[in-house]
Image 1 (cartoon, rainbow, N blue to C red):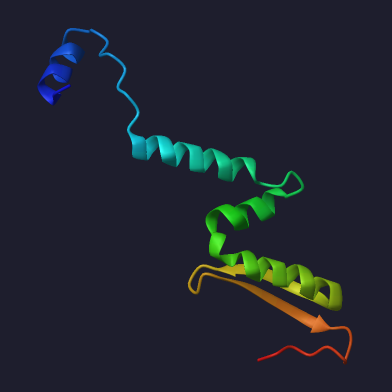
Image 2: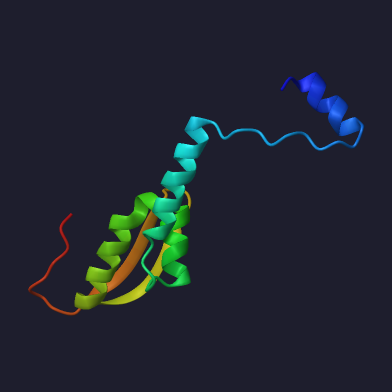
Length: 100
């Protein structure tokens, strides 16, 4: 349907016929649905925020979980300037040291 015909129908108050879904948009919808269905139920809203907004920080968040087992985490925040999850912690065990 051309833009002119569509505009005339809208001016006259008529409903345009439904447009067929393009192959690319249908594929995107299926991919989006698969991604949203694969989100684990156990995630908290904070984790969802990290995964949705800063999806490239997934490994940083995993590192935070591992660090929280072996250290006393003092401060955690997302640096918008560097797009990184910043974790400040005190090590509980002397046998485990951070790798620089």
